[in-house]
Image (cartoon, rainbow, N blue to C red; front, side, top):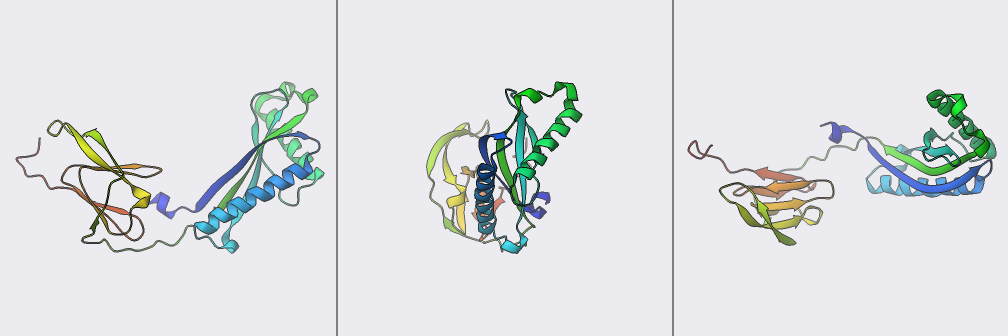
Length: 212
């Protein structure tokens, strides 16, 4: 429920090597590109322009050091003054975390990465009905899967989840692969997709004699 009720958020970033002071044109151009990409992603997710929000961040380190710190980048047009403030904020955070004596000030300051957090509010919940019956889907591949001791290794069809149209029906055993998760549909179970791309699963009922 928490994931479904949360807002929409994307992180778009660029690796850079920008020495401070200086670098205003490079930082301004990078943030402009990142905001454009983040806005496109939010629009594709259904977030209107008026509800799109952007936060700018940068990773800064003392030159010749390996690790950097994430520093919020001030709002407004990118100027030398804003870059100086970001560098000062980095120095303060570094001193608070590691002590002033640990700062390698002689090496100078370097931006190593820029990114934008593109965010929007939670989208309205789309109510969809569960189809009672569907059209048999076609698998994209097949591989052997060990389901249980009774079935052993079983040739199992593989389905590409994002490519399944509405009311696709799949009989188990089957594997439905999505970019962020995999659905294992056991033998005798049935899955069917709805208009929102959700997968509804109905498992086979066990009789008392079949239970271990």
